[in-house]
Length: 431
RNA sequence: GGAGAGGUGGCAGAGUGGUUGAAUGCGCCGGUUUCGAAAACCGGUUGUGCCGCAAGGUACACGGGAGUUCGAAUCUCCCCCUCUCCGCCA
Image 1 (cartoon, chains in turn orange, red):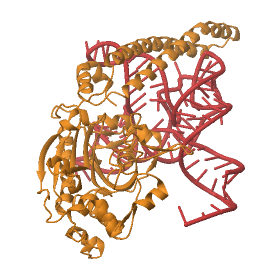
Image 2 (tube, rainbow, N blue to C red):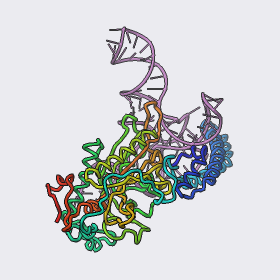
Image 3 (cartoon, rainbow, N blue to C red):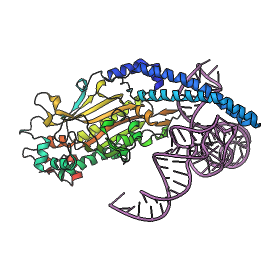
Image 4 (cartoon, rainbow, N blue to C red):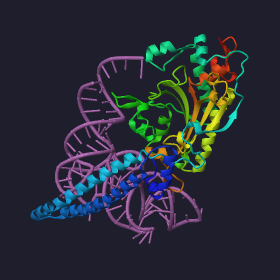
């Protein structure tokens, strides 16, 4: 949700923001609707004030006849008020619906571009492994050979894009999630939270996943609840409707949760393997901080760094991408992705084909907080909306792809990265 | 799943149709007093939208929504939530 007042004062900012994001929104229609709404609202309030005054006077009348007459005189006014109120309500409803669709303008430092092809590589870490000295296998081949993923059983149980992690596969999955959590909690002072993954519509709308992405969520119609595609929902909406104290901020939360995604409209994309699946586990970090652009930017960088530290500890090559305006979605002011080296995706010519997205760091400023009515009382006594940010720490089993593929050996076995061994009983290799 | 009770300001807790956005107490802020503090006393203490340069005005909000009424915290209906008892259950 954007600030209507700001939209009134700087409509061009929102026109440009939407067009840069490649999203169609009729700003003029909103301005027009807003003007009409305010005009009707003023009429309504004037009449209602009159009505309120008259009602009070009636309350003081003692004589029954006088009272009866006064009540009779109210009939016309009452009808007018009702009519105006109804008009105002309708206009406001329309306005809110449109307002919900206005994207947050991208930050000035976000490059303008149409889609992910226009994203900018900011920097890279590690040397992408291209020459293994043998013909490297894909994670699918490795997983099947090692018996650590059973895709067939997954499909039998749950349909397409499903899998079952077996033995060391499941252990590795848990190990990397544990490492990710420990980095956040033990080293970076985040509070570990266990959040609901089944939430009300409010939480989905408040965090900005609805209405635009409604078709991506599983809907439990029996209870009218939704399965979340990320713990971002539970963590960010944790304090919705509340007014926090500035001294409580910044809140730093991390959660591991199962994530549910319908992946509607992706038929044929990444159909094989562990890359795009309906259900996975993810360690997610969320920061709720003061309404301060500079502080938000700092957190954004730091949160990116936390994720990088996991990759570095696992010695996995990656690159950091500044997403362009066309690729950051409705809610973000800025977004940076981390793409990790996945040898099986490399086409042998263009290095960039070998990187697959594993992390996505979002900076939202007030956008979610407005929808969530998430505020704080500043040390100056003023109440403001919080800023929110989030970033992946580790999403698995997608994250098993770079681990399996980068750490594979000629015989099809996989060496377990040092950093994960403590979480796997000291084991050094699979297979 | 069955039966019942209830949701009022930061908290506790009055209020069952008429100047009630809301008594009272606690808390909090400011002041008086004091060498200072405590106590006591006095004053203040919800949010949001709209209009206004401002002072201020106005509307709305007593879980949420709809309704009855000249007028609703108070009456009616729907929804949400909390609690108690019974049943079932990881």
